[in-house]
Amino acid sequence: MLWLSFLYRDTSEAGDVTKKILEDSLQLAPSARDVKIVRDVCAAVSIRASRLASAGLAAVIEQTQRKSLTVAIDGTLYKKHPKFHDLMLTSLKQLAPGVDVKFMLSEDGSGKGAALVAAVCS
Image (cartoon, rainbow, N blue to C red; front, side):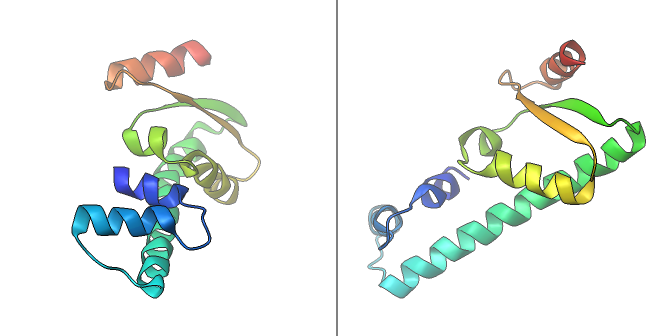
């Protein structure tokens, strides 16, 4: 997933970072079309992953019947991906309209730590 984050950060017109990763890591000689396809796939995978994560969260949020809450979140994808936070918020606004959700990063890697952060914030 780390590659996904690097590739998603590539905002250059020609996809210079994407091209270099494909050349260096995979020993490929990508064309401009190849680079565009890889970038499009990374964007699609990122959006889908954020929607899947948000769907489960929206179901739990619906059960709480709260209008505002803080969710402790952990994981390399959330932490390293430049747009994952924003993608999840966008999805949650569609799936749980009218609910104000805030995310708090829990970097300790355990469920107990995430639960503690959520308890402290609420």
